[in-house]
Image (cartoon, rainbow, N blue to C red; front, side, top):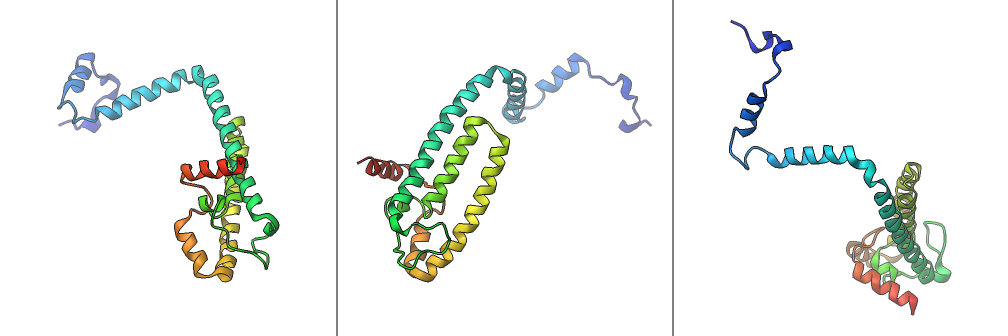
Length: 188
């Protein structure tokens, strides 16, 4: 008795009829047609991808410019609101007052968030993998710097800061309607 493993594989190429029988086997909608459709569609797109290069570059340029502008505005709003309290160090100055409105209502670290958004925008504009890598590294550094800064702020402002942290994202705004209001306030 010959097992499937012992068959001669050189003559085992399926006939077109057998392939068609296999395609028709089973119940429509229960065979995984979505995955096969996606598979063929994506392979087709991989083949014709060079046709989209210019469009993708244009979309990256537009999205990158928009993100860069948004990041610069967010960072500027944070710098402007901090005013004389601005410091490059994670430890706040002695006269620091807790900021929770304006850009600080969007995220706890709008300057860091603005830097990150701007860097991602620049990455899209240039389609630069090194720039993407450096942006990710910047994210890691700023996230850690923010953690250290937040411990100083908890020590200084106590429960008020802890409550603020529970209600406000760390680095990136989530509420675009609030962001639009902050931009409108900047323009005034």
